[in-house]
Image (cartoon, rainbow over all chains, first blue to last red; front, side, top):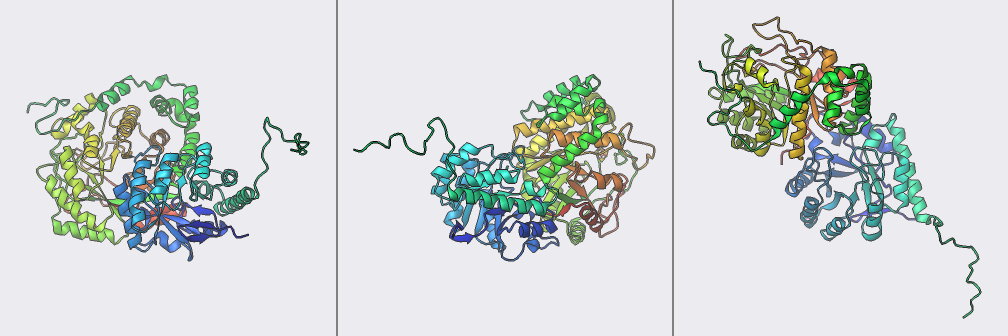
Length: 255
Length: 382
Ligand code: SF4
């Protein structure tokens, strides 16, 4: 079956997106390989352009870079960082991340919408990181986003699908890939999100803080694949008060 | 000389509308660390977010037996928020003139030391030299002397520095918010001001003269810096100058309230201890031994898990290596504490001794050997 993730016209086999910010550089490569990752974020503020240790040197060939605008506190800053990323050759993808809160690192949906609009007009493939709010997601869609990236729980918390119900609403209502970003702590949670119909999972801390990062990356890959297969197969409904008999009670009706 | 009232603003000092100092002083005054029990400490350590009172508990002597446990928690928090990254930077002293008389400091205006100040040519040479090490973050320091090293002079230094470095921080005398705004425009984004001690009486005693004597003006410097557009501010008490637990408690609260009022602000801590200084060999860090110093660092990390913690070269290499990744996420390297001294000969004496004189490469290797990632650039000026 041809089941590809399509973002902004680009096709991906893998539905596991790696947030690279918390790894040692040498680990990044191992994780990408064992997770069969095809897309990884790159914090532009970390790209030590011209310096010795540059994360770009550690990204295997063929990886699609997803530069993010971390460090941006408002739409303007996000736009400027995105443009810089394109200038240094990171391609057209950009993860818009606008955070104006040093404690919880909550994304600012309002500023994110503004940045999405500007960047989409400039031809970027915009993937906004957001707090899962339906209205904001609609506005981002309108503004030209290529995917929507709601958080599952506060960033780095490994708490799993705290915002599950709201993510489900986005999956049901928004006609773009919904990619769960931030908060996923375990492969089982990634699997659950995939079963819900989420298009892909992004994670960072959960893998970076594991004892064996490469093995954990593999576990995530498998869990994401399992969840996707379950979603595609249409999981059997859980019976509730309307128990369904296999031979219907109303089958006698003729007319 | 008539002594000024240390709690009263002087002419030219901007007073902002803020209640943070009163809150911090009140809570610190009430902070009685001897009242905490093991139970209080355990309760605090179970929580995912600590209240100021929980913070008081883990800073108390009752928490001493929990140091190992605190260290494990802190390591996890550090990992969670910073991953394996450890930022590197170096300070550059551009001048060491001083108008103050801090009795604990060898740089004070009554001491006969070699004073100096870099001109722009020398500054550029120093900056270039430092940049060859690969560092991308620099902290510019001056002595506290408006006359000898004015805002314009510092601004010129910042403009130069921002050509070679992606992050420029300042550790200079407190300014008014419009002056911070000017320096921000020149390219500086981070400001570090140490309150030294949060006990106003002690503060008065150890600062007999000079503008630094004015306690509230110094206290509100971080807030003025943020009002001036700076992105981050650093806090610190000179541990050992007064009751270190109370001072650490106050510094934590100060940062906590600033964070609440300015959620976007990037907060960080430094943990200087009183050390031997020029012309005074005997001065020792009272009762702040490494164990206590570590307790303070762990408490900062657990109370404000997202805040940066810097470990300076004042501490010995073995201590620094072990706190990196445990509580600290930022470390200085390739440090010279004289004025100049990277490329040119030093123009002025050194303010204090450094205990860890390793080069940038050596610190880089140390970080790697601990399974962590040295980060040279973690900021983008936009
Ligand atoms: S601590 Fe600073 S202000 Fe005080 S004497 Fe030393 S250099 Fe001057």
